[in-house]
Image (cartoon, rainbow, N blue to C red; front, side, top):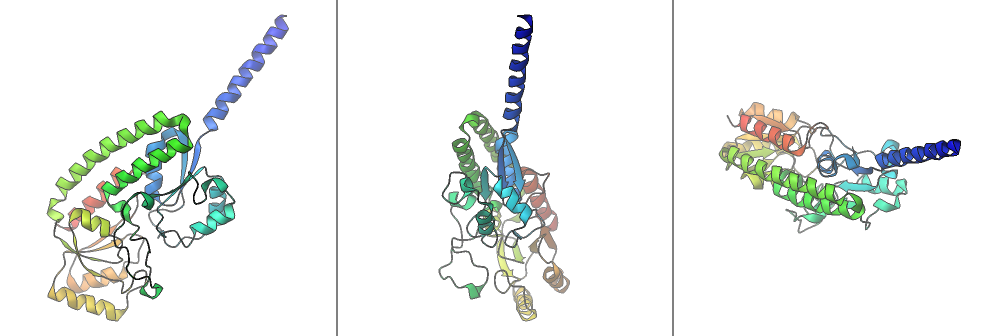
Length: 302
């Protein structure tokens, strides 16, 4: 009897340990296309998810190789969190097709495109690929507007609740905390950046429209003659002539972009060049990244 009692107790303890182990391993695997959505997913999910970002702040999200390692990550994903609006059109469809993962295909609850949940700017009236890298749904780089980021956060938390209802309280609590901290940060940022309103900028690529609208920046020129097409010497000469008529205050480019055209123009005009990280680093949350980017802009304006 004692032996049987010990044996039953042993198996019960083993079963409990196994259940605990399974619970610890029952995290959502979230595949994020860009670092900004990986950072947001980590904030909202906390310990209930493992989040992987397909790209880094030093990569152009338009042009990523559908590597076997990425296919393997997508195959194991429980949720997909990307920008959408054709930003990843050159590589994400291939990843999804080759992964064979039915739960994160378009139309499924775990397929989350951030641009589906906000209004986009610059929707083209004419679709012509000869005009360059044109996005039919509008400019997808809306993560540079903190108000749209908050809209995405609310939608993402709701989607997490849908696909993982057991952790509803966790997602709702994390969303409340995020909105509280984010709203305070926006108030502070808008006070700090008042002096940037009306500043005139030249950009390397037209991917700053949401930041421009939020901060009240005036874009005078784009170094690319067409979106995604490297600038020709004749186009740069036109930009230089334009700036002689109406001077700018700074030249802005994303740190993953070729900075040679910006440096050339800076040498000709004396304008400061600002290379901003277009996405957070793997150790930054969204507030830290926005802080860093805005401080760079303010320093350039001194």
